[in-house]
Length: 377
Image 1 (cartoon, rainbow, N blue to C red):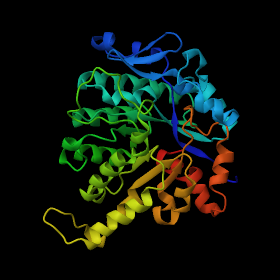
Image 2 (tube, helix red, strand yellow):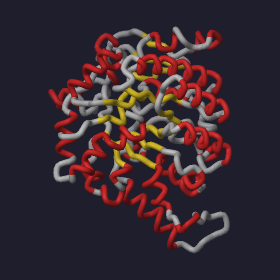
Image 3 (cartoon, rainbow, N blue to C red):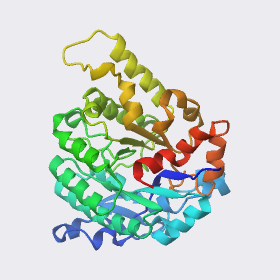
Image 4 (tube, rainbow, N blue to C red):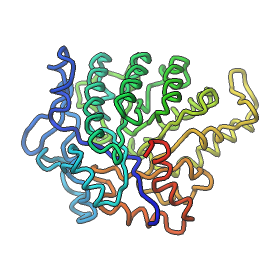
C-alpha cells in the first residue's frame, strides 16, 4: 500500500494492577480484580465473573490454525496474554509487525464494566482506568491514542471526566451504546456533553458491549459482556447503535453541534446503507406529525450522518462495496487487536483484499485517513 494504515479499533487487556493501585480508597475493596485460578484467570467485578484472559491471549491464532481457534475453550492464564495488550513498547512492536502506523485504544474488561450497578463505583472505576490509559498512551503518543470511558448517570460528572481526560492527552471518549429507553440520547440532559465534546474536538464512541440500560434487572448471574452473549444477540447487536444514532439525528444533535463526531465501533459496516435509506425515506416521504423534526436549510438525516458519523469496521467487504451510499468519509478500518477475531498479524493482507479494486483515494481514507483525521495522528 502506498498510504499509511491506522487502526480505529484496538484494545488493551487491562493488567492486574490497573485498578488496585489507582482507584479511590473507599472503593478499594470493590475494585475489579484479576482472580487467578485453574484452568484460567478471570477478571471479576462485584463478585461476578466478567472477562477471561483469553481475550488477550488468542490474537493471531485463527490465521495459524482456524480449526483450533474455533474449538479452543475461551480460557487462558494472564501469563499467556500478549505483552502488547498491556505494555506500550510491546504494543508498538506488534503494530510494526502488523504494518500499523497508529492505533486507537479501547478497553477489554472495561467494556463489560458499563453494567456495574453503583454509579459512584462506576465513576471511580472509569476514572482509574482513564488515568492508567493516559500513562499507557503517553509512552508512544505519535503511535497510540486512547479513548476514555465516561459514565453519564450524572451528565455533569461525565462532562468533567471528558475534560479531565482530554487534558491528560486522551483523544476520544466512549459512552454507553445503550442507555435504555428512559435515558435515550434524544433527551436534553445530554446537551452539555455534546457541546463539550464538540468544543474540545473529542470524538464520542458507541462501542459494542457497553450497554448500560437504566433500570436493568438485577441478577446473581455473571455480568453479561460481548464475550458471553448468545449468538442471537451478537448478530442483532447493531440495533442499539442504530437506535442511539437515530435519536441523536432526529433530536437535532448534529444540527446544533456541527463539529461533533460520533464513532460506531465493532458493529460492522454494511448495515449503514439500508439504515440511511430508511431514515431518509421516513423523513422525506411520511406525513409530518407534531413533534417530528424538520431540519434547517433543507437538510435530510443522511446529511448529518455523512458529516458527523464514522463507522469503524474490521472485516466487511460488503460494506466497503456500499461505500458510495455510506460515504468514504464515514468509514474507518480497525484491527481489533488483541482479541481472538482480530486481523493481527495479517491486517495489511486482509485489508488489501477488502480494498481490492477500490480507487486509491477512497482506499487511503478507509485504511487510515479518516482515523488520522478525527484522532489527530
